[in-house]
Amino acid sequence: MTEKKDDAVTKALDKLKPIVSKLGFGGIVGYMSGMATKTVGRAVAIIGGMTFIALQSAAYMGYLNINWGQIKDSAVSKIDTDADGELTIEDAKTYWHKLKKMLTYNVPSAGGFSAGFLYGVTYS
Image 1: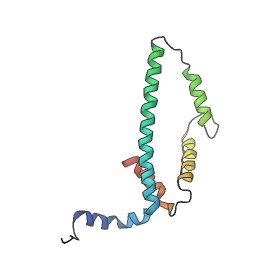
Image 2: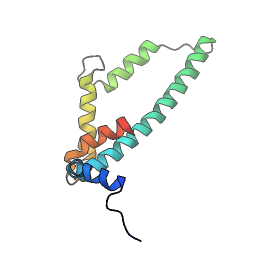
Image 3: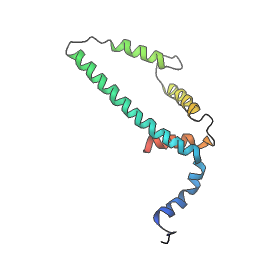
Image 4: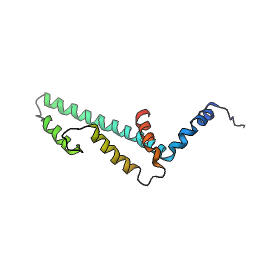
């Protein structure tokens, strides 16, 4: 069986070679981590949304009295990294840097990790 050197996938891989070689191992594990984060994030969002719907429905029907303001204040105080009383992009950046530091710890050639992670979260 002869191999075709000019098939579509081979041509595409040849064109992507400069990009893939720059991303390397760090980009690949970044992409996989991004995909996993997106998947887990969706599951957490579904569970959180279903829980909110159930609680809010019970409150609407008079079974519960929920102080959402107190819940919000408590949640914000626990995850607000700059203690300004609000969840801002700066808080998200802080959590991103902590996550990246953990996920790239002792990873060889982790330079492409951020690009791979972003691609995995965005396009997977």
